[in-house]
Length: 281
Length: 312
Image (cartoon, rainbow over all chains, first blue to last red; front, side, top):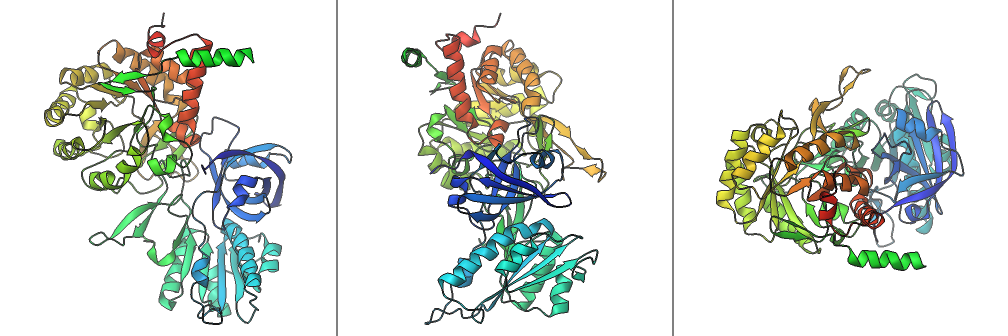
């Protein structure tokens, strides 16, 4: 099947916090194979703005996907004015999502997880958006395997400047939600790393999405504690499908004689293992 | 119904083919270097629909490219400073070329280098491979030695054309930069030394500053401007070069529609490349080909030469 640009129908486009919107679009072809951590390109109506806006898929319900976006400029400003019932041009799902199967690969003879009892979803700012979908996926997986909370717990560790978003969604899919805000308006005053420290949280597996300094600090912590970590990286994109090689990150090379290579965030990622990323590039 | 039958008849009579340096392209639409990869573009459309594909720049050894940000959007255009990141000619021959050869289209390989010796090593390796044409990039604005020193000076352009022509049997097309005072001087130098064609234009050197952060948007500070905002410059240069040389021209620079492609042909191009449009809409090369067919049908052109001869 070819990847496509499709015309989707906007179901909802609602402000959920200051400058932050949730758009729900009916897009069966995108929803069909969407994985948590993938993204879509949105193609704007104003043709002066050529490049698509890559937005991560937050949740998938049947043939509807939800996208959380922040108004960062004219392009996302245009998006915020779209009305329910109107069409929007989007791509089918792009990039590689979180590899949930990595958590479930090591099970004992009773199909219980050997090592992973607590999964942490660590999000900063807009980075929480794809983690909601992942939380939902893990919950479904637990049900499928008849896991109880004693077998596997999912905790959300989320940080914001001031106003938390998607809290209800996390609360319905996670065993615990820990919050930090820079302003101190909700939860701990500080960042997610301080939150992990302060609460003495000891996850066995982490998935993370958020600002690069947060991801770097978390990767460092996970590496020292020998905790597997998958991170979703962000980079300024051109085409969003791998043709322009605009969005790259440095990844430790597996080949001999080469230290590291630049990989494409859009098609090789956006999800990488924390310990394969060269953070100081 | 009758109209449909007529359309089909017109289609049957249409000849979209064009010969570039002795290689026949079934239609004039190709992909601009740096905006196409077999795997990623092939995920959106059947590459066999195109007259030819022009690959990303290939160098003798792997190139790392520039740090990010490499992309900035501008009014009706974009800046890039990718810096010709590529895995090198050997990796290209091993991985990309077999995939390209699985399609029914001509393969034009874009070649980059920092020195004449670099270019020579790469073209020698490619000359023995099942490719159709080499496009020699002497015009990348994004790295200090990205060939632009060759493309900005007629003497240097002549020298590199001569050296490469001496080494290879395959036809070569020199890709020219618009960042010069008189592009016809460069084109004439390349033709004199035996270039089999020229393609123009590469990107215009540009810059964008984030006035809130008070710094350039691109890590590299400057980058190459492409997209519809540069099309008038490209049309003017194709028009000038057509009147200065006799070798084939591949025209590019901001082609977004079939009519844009027709405009390049009318200015004197033999074939066209679609670049930025393919980043904006992955299937653009095929759409533009179909729009060109519709344009020819509506205006009763039977072949490309009639468009080229049409300018009053």
